[in-house]
Length: 480
Image 1 (tube, rainbow, N blue to C red):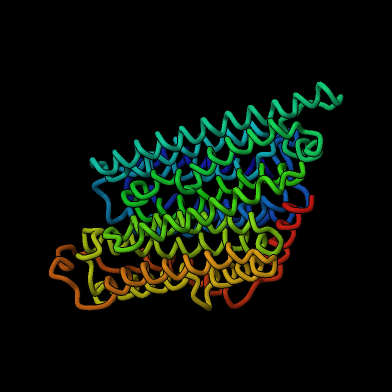
Image 2 (cartoon, rainbow, N blue to C red):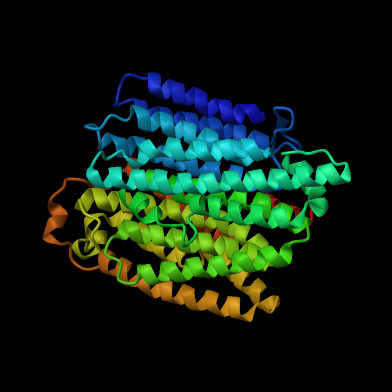
């Protein structure tokens, strides 16, 4: 079963590449995503799932991310035919194939329990995502793609150095303690108390900076505004809700080892400081932002900061951070896809040129507004539950400064974000709003409604199976 979750998307990539029609090829995406969704749910029901001689394994932490990636990819794939029907002048063969390959590599990251295999999968996602960023084939998208490749490749190189240092920490102790040197995460967790602390600290710094670059934490975030600003909406949704969360999972793997090695006092302050710094930088750049897709990029920087902040605080905040992985990704699906529709209708991303969206695109306009309310932590949406739980945990553990700064930065971002969104959504459409003939269609709006309904559902009701998965994952991370 583990191998199926990787090989199935690769097979669908071959099918998509082989389909000759530019018109019918996008329909392979929802078909393949639906079949992947079936096997994903089958995998989640198994108590033990392994493959490739235990190099692949689905643990409680991986289940959260596998569920998220499956749902996220399905709804983005369902959006693709309607979007690509508007872009018939652009060949979509490479894009469709790379989307499936990206799904395969994200699954490989989630299932990998080998240090080197996970690194290879992470590097593969960097290369495979590039054609999606360059889909518009203009100078700005080319610049964004090169910046993404360059910065993320530097990050991956740092992560490789960290992986080598961690491997050496294992080898160093195996020579002195009679242990077996290993690159398997399960073995590293068991040997964690015996790992040499100096090498382990160095490894964590390199790994955190390296995978933090792919995650988009400040100050390693500089690829995000260009990449999100130039990528199609569905690519932005997959980056913000999928690939960056896979990088977060990679960081959690090494945080887990550090916790078991008794290095919590070293790791937690780093996570808290970087998390708050990411939120602060995002708040500063969102004030009077003039490009609404770049605004969403800085929102992603903010929420990546929230994730590592929650793990740094620990306890109930770890549970909240894992819930926020899901709630943020679902809400980003609403925002990026509706922003893509707005961009198609107005032909511009400049906020001062986009007015009266609810008149020009009634459904996309209201969904964009609801997405703003959800992502800024307004009830009754899922991000409110995860952010309020994180704040409660911070104060319960007497993290007064972190909790206070968290609230302050959320307020700054709410007002900065809100000023831009309300000016876009309300008012009369500008004369430029009628320069395109794009209008909302069922094909380009129902996946956004699906994202919004899921974000609303998790805000008012937590399904027991999901609650159990979150509790098991939080317990696994902190008390293995």
